[in-house]
Image (cartoon, rainbow, N blue to C red; front, side, top):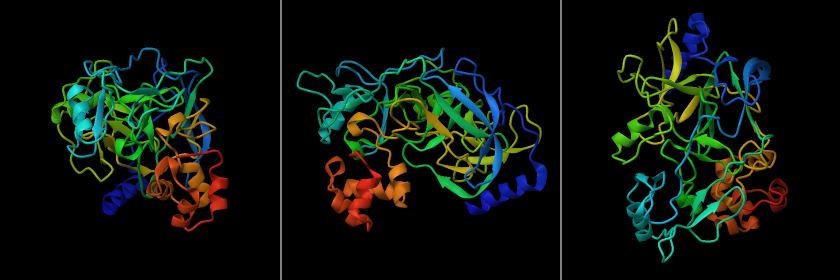
Length: 381
């Protein structure tokens, strides 16, 4: 992996990177106008390595004007909802229907009552009432709600790749929809944040986002024998889907000529030609399995690159997962404690999850209970 990344770094630092273009690297005209809440612009920004840079600043709506979404959670066992990537026994990508939900029930995860009604809660406004509920999310149609993303216009390779864990920020679709890494597992929370058949759902803050390369998700359905299709987004295996937060482009699972990409690194990217671009540039490709997104980022992202005016959820001032704990975000308290978010999350899980004794969590982490409580005011996992 390191050797592959080093070769790309050498390629770029040698001055061989072709001139930037809107379709390969972000500029002020890269995101669809139907998604923008205000005109995009190029602004001064600071990268996470401390260097000054120029970034494209995109302020988008809770949902592009032309994008349809759903279905997510079915109301009853007789209905068919979206999809879910189950990672327990009988792991795989499934359509959320009777057969799937009855299979989960046989494994001890029952999402429906005796009348066949599916347990559902709206994570934006309420918490769960049962042990296993399907998580829905209603859109926040408040006209003032917006999301702002910063993406470097001249991508720089990092010293080493950045792994992308659960719900990590990956980038922005060309349609103005944010892109995140894999959603939380049912095994972690007991609840299922259902995705629609294009691979997206609604954040606790009330805005829609992707957990898949939506323009090439039908490739995954075919590969994994899932009876689903993305009817809301045009499918194109060769098209650019968006930009990662490091500024490198996200493409479908095929090259412009329809062939499979070769020489991909562990993040799912390589140096090669892209349609309409002179020379060769580093870019990511979607995989044929779910989630079909990069597993790490090779470049340097901007500081404070994702904020929202929403009352809760990723990028909000509260920075939490919303009511019900369906999607906890421990990045800020972990930063305050000087530890990794994954270490904090794992310690809380090990001590009982939502009902964990913070004293025992602190002892497991080797920190004081007072410091932990100070870093997590009013928070419960």
